Length: 73
Image 1: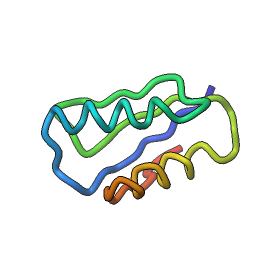
Image 2 (image 1 turned 180 degrees about the vertical axis):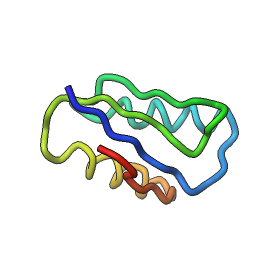
Image 3 (image 1 turned 60 degrees about the horizontal axis):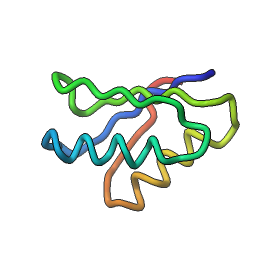
Image 4 (image 1 turned 90 degrees about the vertical axis):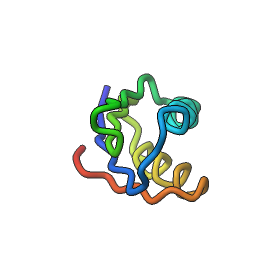
């Protein structure tokens, strides 16, 4: 299993963070999404070793109008 840390430019409310978490968890091969309410701009995503999952995360979030960046893999 691999992990990636994603930075979200937008400041989101707890309800929006939960909706984003559910959105990312719906991507095939994603197993877990962790968002710390104390650091609401960052999320950790655990996924199967699959070459395009980080780009799928970025595409999914950009499709919803967010501005994500991968800050560590």
